Length: 430
Image (cartoon, rainbow, N blue to C red; front, top):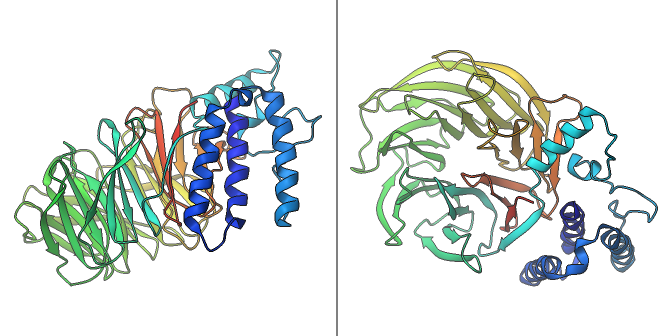
């Protein structure tokens, strides 16, 4: 229970960190890392009453110091913190609470990633994509607009940046792990796909986009890691045999606009591509890499992320982040990839490439949740099977800039989030 209050303190520090040393971003990063470390190590911050008093006093002092108002302070007589997180609101429920409140507390506890495991700050520009390796919670890949891709060892003592991959000349916009985690593919605004050997820390192959256009999304085909699907800024969806560097015959299709996101189902026979016009199209791929366009669906706003899941009330589902302040949950209705809207959630999203993802173990825990970044600098856990008027299960407030990337470790013990300043936070389950 104290972890939720500790996260309130971290959130307060993160928000006021924007006012500290405006011309020195390195100082701000070091400051917030040290504050997080002190919270973890100080035994006094395991007592809820002490934390509430401390939070009140610190909030008042910071407001006076920087001359701004903040709404996180708690009156000493209050029984719960002011937060939209159900995890926080449910802390002081008594044993006589009704069944619904007990269930809310249970799902909140299941998705209570309030502890900060580590903070990475190796990038000098926004980190738009973070991805944990497949079935390996130790490796994290970060793609940044500073033109580099970093590989982090999250479970080392202490966690560290293992190495940085350099080769792109412009902002890196996408990355993906091969099924064996031996390879990483990345794409960038320089119009180049790069294949990296993780063990050798070396670039194996560089392939330029067919139209010499900036590349905005890429993904390994899950069942055949010789194949990579990419989307470019001239509206083309294209398949590449990354082992040979050859684009197969029939492996290209014009979607229109700027192709921003790609989501594959596990067999690789079907995938979805979406663009900045809000158009989502399903595709089928044959064994040779040739594409067939199937069904289309439209939403309002650019689709910056699409994620596939095999499980949702016995139907596969697609999660779509769109720049009309929305997160859409679609049921995949048939073998043609037709999408039927199930739910729409309000998420602050207009300008940046905000990402979202399914919780990997959602079918085995109480409640079904998805996670989304947001331009209000928060990470949201949303209950997709609960009441529509109260979907927020948990809200993480550690970033001071728009949260762009989110990624779970395969066992759901760690969550990575990245923001527009280049900061990456690793959250641990409480």
